[in-house]
Amino acid sequence: MRDNPGNTPAKEALMKLLEGNLRFASGQSKHALRHAHQREQTLNEQSPMVAILSCSDSHVPPEVIFDQSIGDIYTIRTAGHVVDNVVIGSIEFAVELLGIQLVLVLGHQNCEAVTATVEVGDTTGHITDLIDKISRVMDDVFRMEGDIIANAIDIHIKMTVNTLRTSQPILDKLYQKGSVKIGGARYDMDSGKVVLV
Image 1 (cartoon, helix red, strand yellow):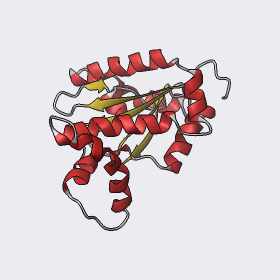
Image 2 (image 1 turned 90 degrees about the vertical axis):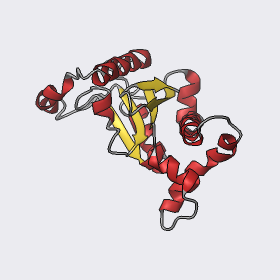
Image 3 (image 1 turned 30 degrees about the vertical axis):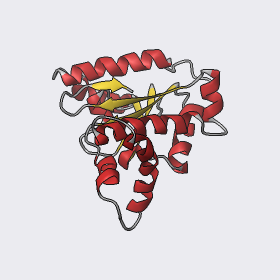
Image 4 (image 1 turned 180 degrees about the vertical axis):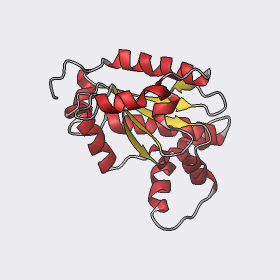
């Protein structure tokens, strides 16, 4: 891992994210007015405090819901926060070359990719690859009580976190050593709040 004394410890990064989310949820975001300044500051280098793998849903922009600015979050987005080798490689880049110590998988309420997995069934094209990745959670979901979609979203977040924690040869070693924390959270679109999963 690159020696970067400016790296934000995982616990501090998580605290900043949750504090920013509280500002956002209460309508008191402060970073929107600082983007021009941050763009200039981060022009030649970056040292984001966190890597976030989130759904590409337009309702869930991580920088906005966590009230952060340009350069604060290294973001990877796919429909349903589905993981493949390119996503894992991007996260390895974040932790190995940028020295990021916190990786957060961010799912969200009413995820359409998860809903499609539960309700749609047969698909065509590359959407099938997406649905296949998410459908791994369905055996567990159908054994649970409560809302099927909400349960599928939470189980999918947990499964994605586990996939990253056990990814060899890089993430699993860093996670086991404790030098990288990998966790999950869910964004509630009704309240604007993020809860840890």
